[in-house]
Image 1 (cartoon, rainbow, N blue to C red):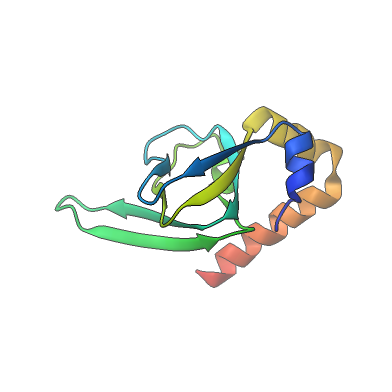
Image 2 (spheres, rainbow, N blue to C red):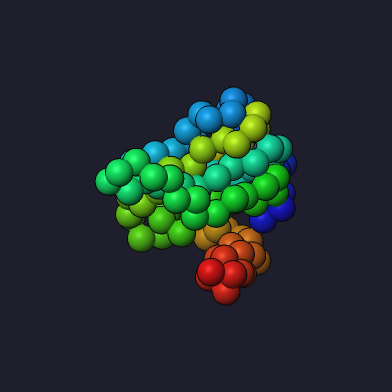
Length: 121
């Protein structure tokens, strides 16, 4: 787990349950939340002009998604879709940034996680 669930909840994170095929966020949407999976699986995907799906990544419980776009004020270039029933914590961007500013160690963990994702690709 990137950030402990209790820390996220104490910072104001809200838990939401998603059914399989439900979007957590969609391509083109402005990045306004930090998301972390509590249970279930999520795929990051997009589609080409002909409608062919490209799966960019598959994420499991304990992993976060879309966090890199919070630092560059960028829209999501892909969708986040529940593969099965899942629970996801969401924390408003402003609260997430504040949490990182108050906790340098947590900021390091986020950077470490981003580095792992870049290395994996």
